[in-house]
Length: 424
Image (cartoon, rainbow, N blue to C red; front, top):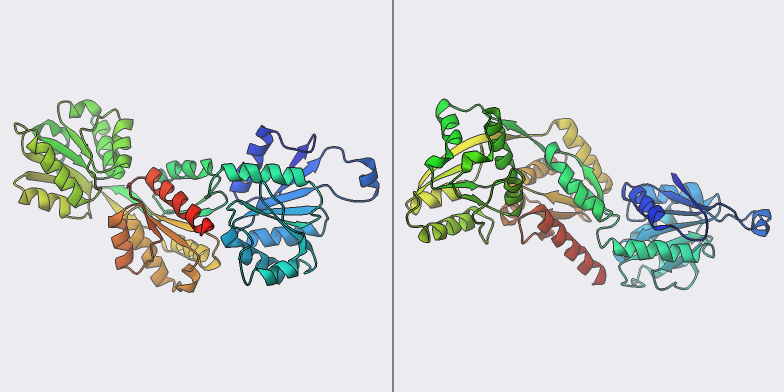
C-alpha cells in the first residue's frame, strides 16, 4: 500500500495524479494528515483515509478486511453496476455487518447506513445512476472534503477509470494501447496471445518489395504489414524514398498512422475497413486516375483473408501478394495465465484487435473449459466487423464493435458503451 502524507485537508493536483497512478495499477492508497489535532490524537481516532477502486475484484475486499480493523475509513471508487457485487463481497468477507457505510458522489452524500442494511436494499434496486460513485466504509465522518475531491477527480477520468483491461496484442504492440488506457486511469493487463515472425522470402519476392515503383498502387492492410515492410527496406539500406511516386493506400487509421510514422504519405483510405470496402475504394481511386498502372502490390501476413486480392482481380486488376510474416500462437503457459484471469473474473474487458487474437482467445476458452458463467461479466470489445465475425464464428460473445477500426476508435466505443451501461 502506498502512502501519501497530506499537509492539509486536501490533495494538491500533483498528489492527486500520484494517487490515481497507483490506483490505476490496482493499488491501495492511504492518505494521512501530517499533523492531526491533539484532541483527536489523544482520543486514539485515526484520520487515515484508504482508497482503492472497488469493482468486483477480490483485491478490493481483501484490502478492506486488512485495513478497516486499524480504524479510519476506506473509500471504494466504484460504479452503480458494480455496487451490489462489491457490497455482497464485503458482506461475505470478514467486514462486520454493522460497519457504517455511506454512498457518495462528487456532489452528494447519501444517508448513513450499515453494511447489512445496504446489502439488503441493493437486492431490489440501484440507489443512484450517477456513474462516478464512492462507497465509504468505516469512519464515514472523517475526511468528507477529501472524499469529494477524490470523487471529482475520479469523474474527470471518464467511464473506463478503474477498469482492468485484458490486452492480447503482440508484445511490441502493447505500449500504445497501455498508454491510451493509462490516460483514462484504466489498468492494462497485458498477456500477448500471438507473436509476429518474419518469413524467408524468395529472391523474386524480395525484388518486388524493393521495387514498388513497378506498381500503380501499394495497398497496406495492417500495422504489422507496414512494420514488416519497412524492416525489409531498412535491411537493404532503404526507407520511405522507395515509395517515391507510388500512391499508398491504408485500410484504416491505425495503418495510416504506422505509415506516417515512417514518413510515408497515404493517398486514401476506405470508408469501410474491410477487404470488400478496401477493394471498392481502390476501384473508385482508379476510376479517377485512368492513366495509372492497373497493377497492385498487397503485402500481408501468411494467413490472411482473400477477399481483397480476389475482388481486385475480378475487377480486372493485376495483383501481386507477398507474405511478409506469420502470426504464431502463444505458449500453453500463457494460455493458462489468461484462463486464470477469466476464471477469477479479475478483468472487466478483453480487447480483440484482430481475427488471430479472436481465434486465440476462443482456443483458450475451449481448451481450458471456461464456462459461460465465468465470462458473464466480461466485456469483449472488437476492433472491427471482420474481427467480430471471427469471434462469433468461434462462439465468443462480443459486447461492442468499433465503428472505426483503430485503437482510438475501439477505446471511444468502449467509453460510450460503459457510459450508457451506467446510466441505464
